[in-house]
Structures are given as structure tokens and as C-alpha cells.
Amino acid sequence: QVQLVESGGGLVQAGDSLRLSCAASGRTFGTYAVGWFRQVPGRARDFVGQISWTLRTYYSDSVKGRFTISRDNAKKTVYLQMNSLKPEETTVYYCAVFMSPYSDGTASPNNYEYWGQGTQVTVSS
Image 1 (cartoon, one colour):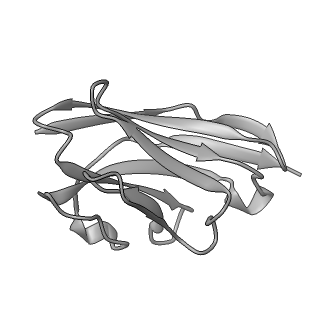
Image 2 (image 1 turned 180 degrees about the vertical axis):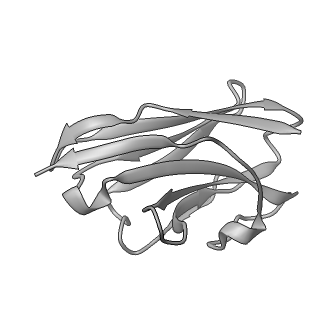
């Protein structure tokens, strides 16, 4: 079992930055990829990016160059640094642990086994 807790969400203005954290507890964390997703009510969860156990990252085209994912395995925490935020990125952000160890994460939320409760990010115009 893995428990995930996101934090760091809040209200910012367009163009501002925000850093989200995803703290994990439970089984071995360092060998699993962790993904970030966001979800507007009534729509499917959208992939934001992932960081593998080897620290390889990839991002959706919509956030590439503005968002950065990092991890501190000693603290069992993954971070999502979001810069130049846009009003349309207002939604709930989730982190999730990939279903298999020693693998890169994927863009499909169906391949992630454990999810946090989400943290709200609101970007005002």
C-alpha cells in the first residue's frame, strides 16, 4: 500500500508560479514512476507529466517548458514546479504512483495504481 498526499495548491494570478508536493508513505517509493495529472469536473484526468525511477521526465505538450517535475526519494516526495500559470489551468491536480516498478510512467491514468486526494490550483486572470 502507498498513501499519497498532495499539497501546495492555492490561488495565484496568471503568470505566477506554484510548487506542488506529493508526499508518499508506505512501500518502497524510489523504484516507482510518479505521474501528475489534472482533472476538470466532468472530464477525464489529463496527463501533466511523469518522473521515472531513473529521474527521466516527460511532459504533455501543453506544459512542456513551463512545468518541471523532480523527486527526493529520501523524503519520499515528488514535486511539480509550475511556472507561467494560465487561468485555464485552474483545476485539481493529482499525483499517482505507476503500477510497476523499474518502469517509466505513461500518460494513461489507468496505469497508475495509487492516487492522492488532489490539491486545488486556481489561477485568476
